[in-house]
Length: 133
Image 1 (cartoon, rainbow, N blue to C red):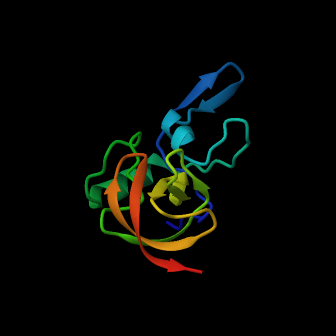
Image 2: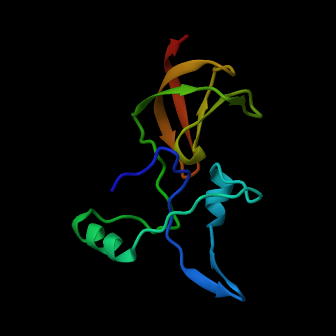
């Protein structure tokens, strides 16, 4: 299956009936840690559960759908652009699904190569290993 680069998040959810419409609930974590704004309108793609079941039987075990895995691993290197400065003066970069990488010593607008030194469920820390211009 091909996944669009425009994908903001991926999760499993039930479809529930609510008066004259059907509702798909977006997990709170997807809004709090991602690029989703509850006031915006988005395109939704539905993937058959049957196809998921077939893929899962051949894939390695995964965590619960409500707990997406961070898109980076400790030791991984990434080129990132610093978009903001955090409250403690560290650079903030965002990668897939709006996941945050904190980069100490970086300034807004810088593109840097970082090595991920720490990974948490909603953010990672990356150390600058190369500055790019």
